[in-house]
Image (cartoon, rainbow, N blue to C red; front, side, top):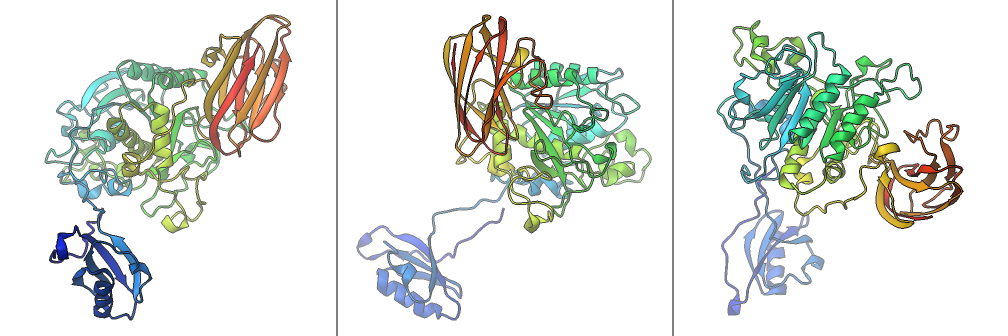
Amino acid sequence: MKLLTAVIGLALALPGGAPAARFAVGVAPKADPAAVAARLEARTGGSTAKIGPFAVELEATSARGVAGMKGVTYVERLTARRHVAFAPSDPLFSRQWYAPAVRAFDAWPQRPYWLSGVKVAVIDSGIDGEHPEFRGGRIAAANTFVGGSAYRDTQGHGTFVAGLIAARMDNAEGIAGLAFPARLLVAKVVRPDGAVPLDAEARAIRWAVDRGARVINLSLGGVRDPMNLNHDSYSPLEASAIQYAVRRGVVVVAAVGNSELAPDKPWPYASYPAALPHVLGVSALGRDGSVPMFSNRDPIYNDIAAPGDDLFSTIPRVLSAAHPTCVDPGYSDCGPPEYRRPQGTSFAAAIVSAGAALVRSAWPTLTADQVVNLLERSSADQTAATGCRRCTDNRDSLTGWGRLDVASAVDPHRPHPAVDKYETNDDAGTHAWRVGSQRATLRASIDYWDDQNDVYSVYLRKGQRIRAVLNGTPGTDVNLVVWKPGTRRVDELRYPTSRFFAKASNRPGAKERLRYRADRKGRYFVQVKISGPGSGGYKLQLFR
């Protein structure tokens, strides 16, 4: 941040000892600053401490009437201050252009040692456990789910991601991880051939949750294609593991994917697991603010963007062996070609995971959904003015809500979103919220991009009637659907042809109501769905 210095002059006492205030008064073009100063003193009875070509510093008890004076363009009371952001002392920090790009340290004038530590899980190809950037307790625990050692990384991907998040700060060497209060949980899930077995990923997620992860970084993914299920890699095993993490209050961050793995480029759908409920999907930005062609697009599941091109981070030192004369072994400029100017949504996701860790450190009592909401809604909108010519104002399919802005997300003056006590209730079966009373009034929230479905489970006897009344936020389009016993997923792609579909109320707008008589006993599922862009609270009344 810039150090903004106000015009400074000699403080003069006002007649009678009355308390004075300082004002900056703008001088209009072609106006005489000295003449403006004289008129200011005559009008206010104050003193001009400094006269410049563009502004006059005025000390007076009041500036009433000054704004309308001839030759004056503005009046500002000089109470605001700006602070210089702290800068890590690590010698290669100057190469981390992405840190100021996301304002990683701008919220603090000096390193905030009081921030609470959080555990961030890096589920990837392992880590170089002997790298100096990860000594001194930076690794809380490590485990492998594909054999070998989690402390040995032959691909380098996991070490690069880990460095972006949690490389040691102010250790007189290398770089600084953006999540300086964090400690790493390292889970190795990548086989020597580069493949990630789904069962290994799922076990690693549960392992990380059980060891206290507050943020999980998933810089991996599989192609999603809702129009061609032969290309679609949805996995119930993966979804169940993600749900396990989300239900236990973990912020899950995932890359939206690189389109070289998809049938076309750029690909219009975010990968899994970024496209799963409550997962923060991350796309990539170039240094000029544009979105690279490799970064997947998605109008719903692309939530936020971060630098993902020409980054600088740690690599296993064994990968530096081919460059014995390299000045900085163990860092990406000493690595093989793919690491010298690395790019990918994988690395953008790591930067957002670091941002999530900083928000959790600053506000440890917030829920995972609140943290995600803060990160999204505080982001800087990417438009043509910021280098993204294809981006539109507000949320878009290329960058979601915009570029990560850590300083804005941790701002103590930013209001925190409300808590939805029924989350996570995104699907049928055991994921639904059980409603026991015969009459219930449920107040919750729904979001087209992060939380499209809320599902409530109610038990009905054969022949028993249920009445549901839904009142949503004006301007949103919400629907009600009842599903029969045995429903495992509220699958809107097959609705209403599914044999489990019972009844729906899907009129336009924010109000719905329906009645249904059970044709058999069992647990029925009442789905609240938002069908178009928007978000807000709702009241659902259920009568049995």
